[in-house]
Length: 124
Image (cartoon, rainbow, N blue to C red; front, side, top):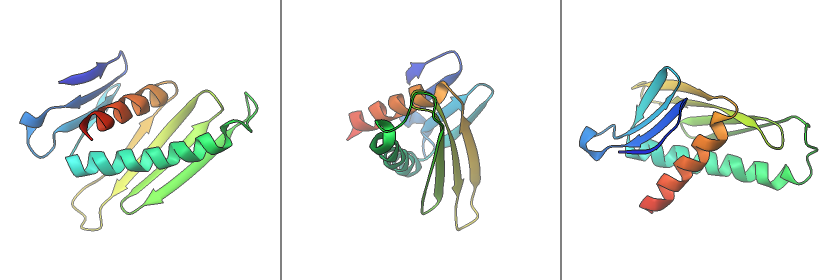
């Protein structure tokens, strides 16, 4: 069932889909994630957002910021300013099973991040 449907993005959890029961889609692309991938991605993005919050009050309105974080199979970066930012996320497995890259543009990144966070919190 969709947790949120916006014009340019979607976030869906559908346990009937089996192993790949989470879907993140933006514009004309989508990726399905396993529950463990969704959980680890959410934890990584929360760490990245915490880094952003730590410097948020020190930023001027139009000052540019670029933050990166890497953890196991994930790499994520946040780029933008105090109020608007994008995210780029890369997933690479050591087993060469599959890898993918996502780009969440401004203003989609902020909305999708907070909806993903709400979905994860409702499950835990």
